Image (cartoon, rainbow, N blue to C red; front, side):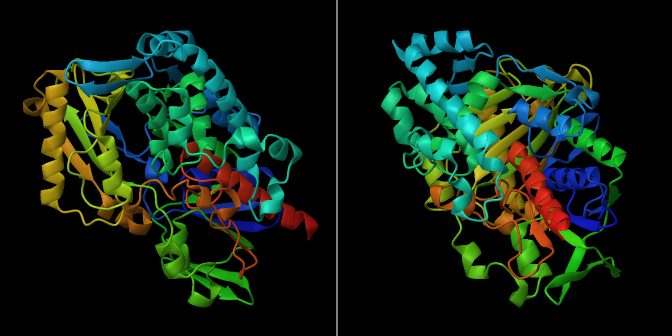
Length: 493
């Protein structure tokens, strides 16, 4: 039944992925995007010769991207070029006190051994277990639609359940193997992307350490938006229709089916709909109450991943003592984490992440200049003001100058801030969150919001608030999972 028309709400990674997967099957697919360009949180912009990725800046799990393009008989390098980032990143612990994580695994073993005698042997065992979790988690678990727990009664999963460490925390798991505080910080760092403290994140997610240390950190030339452009080009080759500046204002339901989408005062009909926009916005604003999967109280009880306060900064000189990716843990991150998750408020002395992609790609800034993206993880739901943002901007630049031992502020020729209110305005983001739901045990796998609407037969969901969770690779997979569920239904009918 290739004459089916399918509408996708949102042109982020999951929406484009879903659209391409369905177009490959011969269906007519239309994506409706509220913004003027695709990409969702992964949009970019250019100002005064500086190009900034607005959202994701880390390219991890290259195999996920390779598998995605190979599904369509394409290759990654048909659409964008990758460079290995070396060193993978720099972690600052104080003035003239930092550790560069090597891109070579053998060099990583040497680094660990230099900080804690005997730790390299433990790391090899740790990464072997992490690889097992990666293979089970990424190649099996995340591709399941997670309708119920019975999907996870797979022999390979059950037989290796103890090795998955679902009931251990990342914090206890790492500390059981390593004692040096810097090694602990290096190994706990990747779970920041998962939206919960290491104490509340299942040790299953040590699979992220395998992604970090073994698979490495990469960079798509031109920035992460090159991935968006590549995926859009592939989608268009498959026949997907993109409609920009097309916000959906209402989903009309009739006889337990989507009757039409209201877009710019037009009624758009489709046989199936995948909502890859913010799940809470779809349910709370676009659907009537009787057609929602979850009431408002459900969302209020969810553990949300952090939001982010971002600064996009153009500097008109070359900077020293920075790598492409830089983590600043010179303050007490446990206090900062508590101010995100336990007692939400604006942080008193936050950790920082700084991207300086001109260290790898000089094309994203004018000659002899640098583009900086400064990110502070913050609690969702906080009210941001110009005064608050300016305060954290000055704090960040002062810290950056101090820890890299150079003047920066006087050479800044461009700056732009982005915070919770911007996430809400641009993406209808629930509480202005940046990373979706936290990957806690009670919000993992079949315990996440469902990819299908239980009351509307032809409405499905994808993206970072549903299966398999936040992050670029998972959201790409999310779109595929939702699309394949529709294909199954059409084939049965």
